Length: 85
Image 1 (cartoon, rainbow, N blue to C red):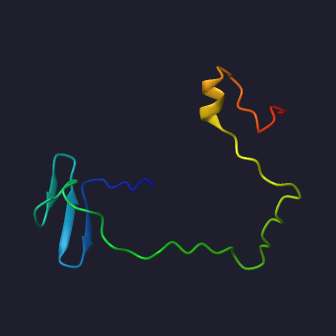
Image 2: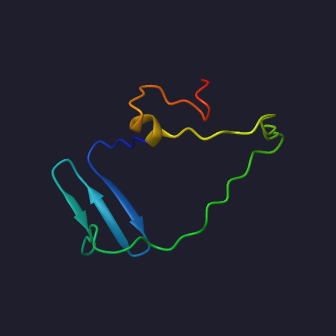
């Protein structure tokens, strides 16, 4: 996301704000960077738009690729179980 402004832009939430100008960044309070845990939010709940049908599951079982085993055997190609790519 790109937001452009000629002289300044202000982000305001409740009683707090951040004002950005070409020469400075001003805040209404102390800025805490990385000294606390993330805030509690809502769980992610993804939904398809109306009218969109989900993909059908694949007709074959999905086999995981093991990058660790490929590295241990010195292989440059990660192959599924059994070695058939």
